Image 1 (spheres, rainbow, N blue to C red):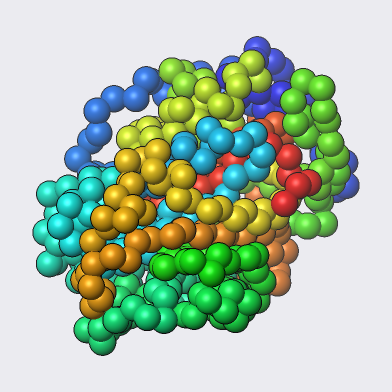
Image 2 (cartoon, one colour; image 1 turned 30 degrees about the vertical axis):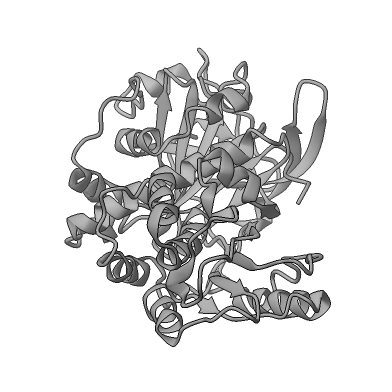
Amino acid sequence: MIGRGGSVISGKITGTRSIGAPHRMTVSSAAYGSDNMVTMAPCTPLLPVILLLVLLGPASQETINPALVDLTNRNADFGTRMYRAIASRTDDNIFLSPFTLSTGLLVLLSATSGSTQEQLFQGLTLTGLDHQSLPDLFRTLRNVVLRRDAANLQQGAAIFPGENFQLSTAFQDLVQNKFGVKAQKLSYTLPRESEDAINGWAQEQTEGKIQELVPTLDPQTQLLLASVASYQTRFNPPFNSSVTLDERFFVDKYHVVMVPMMFRADKYFLAYDRSVKVGVLKLPMADGAAMLVVLPDEDVDITAVEDEVTSENIQAWIRQLKKTKLEVQLPRFTLESSYSLKDTLQTLHITQVFEDDADISNMGGAKGTKLTQVYHKSVISVDEATDDGIQGRDAAFATPPPRLTINRPFIFIIFQQTTGSLLFMGRVTNPLKN
């Protein structure tokens, strides 16, 4: 069932709506039993991935290289594993960019050799892929995912070895041309200068939206991997800020906060997973991406749902989406999340690259250097913003449709519809906290 203000309950749909005073309605069981019926059976084995790409959206009608599909699925598997690992360590809001993080880790993969590289292949779920062709394959994927006209997405990754490391020109050219990643030596014996250099790089990559990536650095640092991302939603159709109202958001059983709740009536894609007990709403973006909002039932703890956030389940949810008339209320929120991921990566069995016997010689230097830390920071603004500044208008329906109100902790997933690549994943437990 979909929950308070958006529950699948028996119910008459009542109420009238005027500007500034949205009426109270719910997604009723009748809506799920009509022509707009949206049900979801327990997740089944994956359909062929090509079929998935057809279902993702109009842009996905292009022919996609099967090798790109395979890489996309593997990246998604790693991204969801990383999300679950981070989620298990905190009850707070979460936000990360699996695609940007994977970009940096693929560069690290290219820097390693021997057993260090083999363990990275396994940890990143890339075992079986040809190492030699991987950079070209990723460059093709990156060119599809990172559209030049998508000004609302800024991202970047970089690798920073110490100043005494022999960084080869061939490696620098490889990571720049294939991955769009910067390789730059830093003098970690001067921590403040290194901090300024990395933070300045983060500011440049995100057009100032991320001001600080690393607070303090250890002078004994040998090698750092960094990735940053910034995203501004551009919903299509957009929400109308003139009807945004403060409404209750149930943080937990004991805490309620008032949050700006955006509103729009339109035809949306909706699904329900009875096995996980979540509703899934798709919100398309103007840049070719889409957001999946995953809302647990009222009596379901979000941590139980997060155990089921796998790449297979996400694809199953997408396959089950069906269009229905709906009024949607979604909180306006901004998240900024920063992570030091060494410990988290080690729980995913990526350990040797951090140890004294790490082999990172493909960067050009001798053995003996190990990775010190992996930094990741991402920010997102979810609001009524549009590219042209024109406010969205509600679709006109003869009878007011059911309403889905996202008014308790939820998970959101932003994916690029042409390839299905996971761009961002997050959890909102309190929309008022960054």
